[in-house]
Structure formats: structure tokens, C-alpha cells
View 1: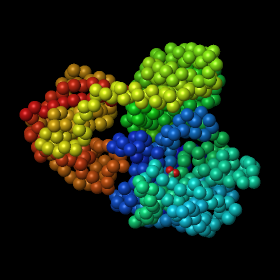
View 2: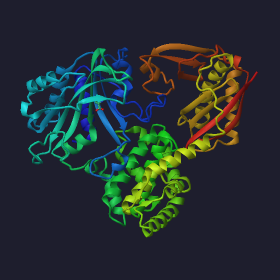
View 3: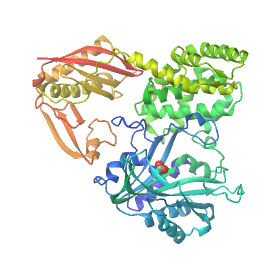
View 4: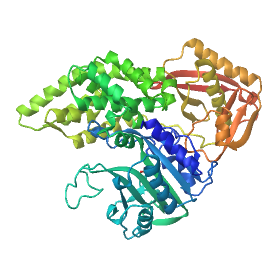
Length: 583
Ligand code: SER
């Protein structure tokens, strides 16, 4: 069975069992700076797990695009992935353990036709705070899993981060048929006999910052089934790289390579897919946070293309191939094809200019260290590779490993912090962010921002997406995705268009509607989990329609004259406009 069929069967099964299919949240929760990427399906549902009403009801299902970054450096082995898709079903206070377990079991055995004997499960063993989950075990037995394949483990507890909704979970494992590695071998063991396939979390608690646990007002179910892993198992493959999700790109790399290296091929295939997904959802390389993760992915991939001795000119073909292969599952890849190419290739070009020099520099330092009888590279070299040659320190660490030498990451981090402190000094002057200050001027700038956003899309195209906005009483600042510098003519056109709309004195109106209706009505917005079930949509004449909390002016005529002061680069693929209103 192909991955897309598994996804469709999952959604259909839960739809047939009273669930509403909701869209995947974007990989980048633009309005939520607390997390870098979406890492689990429940993330977009937190308000509803806590009791808010979801507009689609209390039983939901979806596929969720996820990116987990803690294992980046493990990618290259036979199982780790950064990007993956998670299939999930949710009960927001509707059903609980019994129904959830029944449905999981039925889906696995009746829809995917996995023999029941192949399934083992684990339940929460209990601790001081919450009891052992005998209930879940009972339902598994009733479903058809005998006692000897039900294990109780201490770790069966799920929470995203430190604080939030959480609870005991029950995990399902596929028995690959390998013999037990020891008498005590159980699903917790890493020997490869058991592969985790699905997790049901019974979210009935909330963990507070101080570590205490209270019971939620509703009992929820949050489940997550890893699509890549399930695809691999159902196809009898040993790694996800052998499934149709990666096979075409793996084969192409094998044809192109001049040096054989399976780890490098996996790294290229995995990082390329992950980078493409991030870029399609609006991510751009930079030196901080999520931008830096993307930079690391592209640069590590580039280095491994080099190791395979594949000409970097091939990158474009590899991207085309991946889009062809994945566009049915992710139409956003096709829609953002040109941007994806531009961003990846530009980042590669930046890196490749210094890659060879940097590697030389590294070898020099490594030889010197060896001559001096040291088994580590000095911190200054690692820093220089980062600062001058753009080597993510993790890439340097990897090169070091390949050369049987170590790097002092602790020393590097210390130096890095000192360096950051220095560059921060002098740039302390910060603008107040968002709309913390609400007065006549900031409200006017807010409405002007909507006009600017709409004008940019009209003049430059629909690829323009908001990437950030900052308003003070003196000016607006608007960041948006656009691959190149705007021409003088484009800037003039945008400015004229905004002023034309101001002159027309268009009414600014606000309507409340469901989020889905807002999307359907064509309203633009940052479609993330921050929206409640009802949203406000601000419309300016027939020119602009945006999901937004407000407030705004009543008529555009109140704004005065709009003037663009500056158009500059904000980060790679993101432009920044500063503009003022003159009364
Ligand atoms: N939140 C759980 C997980 O990520 C189940 O979806 O595993």
C-alpha cells in the first residue's frame, strides 16, 4: 500500500466514524514564537483540548505535517527523519479510552489488515501523580490483545514541552518477527524487534509551570500514527528510504554519484524533502531559530552532495523530481516550485563558495592538532569556520567525526555567546512590537498595512505572504516573502495603488464568521492554530480581506498620504518595507 492510500484510508475510516477532516496546520506556526516548527498534530488543537469549542465539532481527524529537529544529526541511519507526516484522530471530550482503543485496533487489523498477532501494546505503569492504566489494558484485552503482549512502562506519558495538556498514553508496536534479543526484550527495547506505529494519548490532565497536575474539564484523546514508518512496514521494507516516498530520489542519487555512500544519499534525500516542505510553508534561511534550521538542512545536504561528488547543478533536477513524486500528497510543493528552487539554490551558492576553503582550513587545524598530540580542534577554528565560512557548527562536528577528531562544542558555544553579546551592544534601541500601544496613529498604520499587503499581492503576485509586521506611532514595517528586490517601478506602483485606495475613501468593515468560512471567502491571513473557532474578517471596499483582530479606522480617507521609505532585504527570500503616513 502506498503512503497516500494509507493516509486516505485513515481519514476515511475516521470520517465514517463521525470525525470531521480538518486541514493540516502549516509546518511553521508563524504567529507562535514559542515553538520553531509544528512537531505534533495536537499543537494546533491546544485551545480545544483545554475546552474551547471547535467549529468542526468534537471529533476530528487530519494528516499533520511535522518537523522534529532534535535528531537532525542522526539522519543518515536507517530510520531517523526530520520531516514526517502524522495521521491523527481527536476526541475533544467526546469519546475516551474504550472507543479510541477499539477504533485503533479495528483500523490496524481490519483496514490495514495487520494480523493481530503482530501487534503488541504498552500502557502507563503509574507513578506518584497518576495511577497505572489498567483501564487501557482491559480494553486492549477486550479488543483481542492477550495479556502477554500488553506491557506496562513508566515512560508512557505524553506532553509537548514542559507545560500543557497531557496524560498517560498507550502505544502500539509492530513485531517485525525478529527473535527477542534477551529474555527481557519488550517494546521499549531498541533491538529492532518492535517498531512503534501509533500512540493514543489520554489527555485528561494539565501540567502547570510549577510541575503540578490538575484534571482538565474534559477528557480528550490525541493520537498520532507515523505515516512513513507505517508505509515502510506495510511494504515490508527495512527503511523509509526504500518506499516510494524516497525511492525515486535515492535511485537518481545513485545514478549520479561518483562515490558510493548510502548515508550521504539518505541525508540528501531527507534534507531536501524537509527543506522543500519548510520553504513551501514560508520558511527562509537565516542565522536564527527556524531560519537557521533550514540553513543547516540545506548546507548539510550540500556538503553530502559534494561527498557523493554530484555536481550541484543537479540540484534543480532533484527538486523537480521530488516535486513530481510528492505533488499529489503535497500540492503546495508544485504551487511554490519556483520559490523552492530559488531559495535552495541561492543558499547552496552562498555556501559552496566557502565550502572548499573551509574544509581546507579544517584539515589544516586537524593536522596541526594531531601534530601537537591533541585529539580535538581548537574552538577558534570552529568559530572561524562558522563566522567566516558559514559552517553550521554541527556540520563541523560531523566533519570532525569523519576525521576521528573532536570539537569542543562547549567552548564554541561560550565563544558564540560572547560574540552575540558584542553584536547586540549598540543595537539595543528596540521598537515596541505589535499593537501593544493602541492609539490613532498605530490604528491608522494597521489599516495601511492591510492596504499595503493587498497592493503587494496585486502588483507582485499571490506568492507574497506576510512574514512579519511591526508598527510604531512613527511608521509601519512589513516583511513579506518575495524572491528578489523590488524594482523602482514596482515600488511606485504599490505606493500609488495604496494612495488610490485611500483617496477612494473605502469603508473598512468587520464581520465575524467561522474560520472555514473566512478561508472560503478568500480572506488572507496567517492560517495557524492561533485562530479560534470564530474569527474577525476586516474588509476594505473590494480591495482587501484579511483575518485580523483589529482595530482599524472606519474609512481609508482618514489615513493621509502613504509613502514607502525603504525596501530592503530582511532575510533570504523575505523583503522588508518601511512606510509612513503623512497627514
Ligand atoms: N501527541 C502524540 C504524539 O505526538 C500523539 O499524537 O505522539
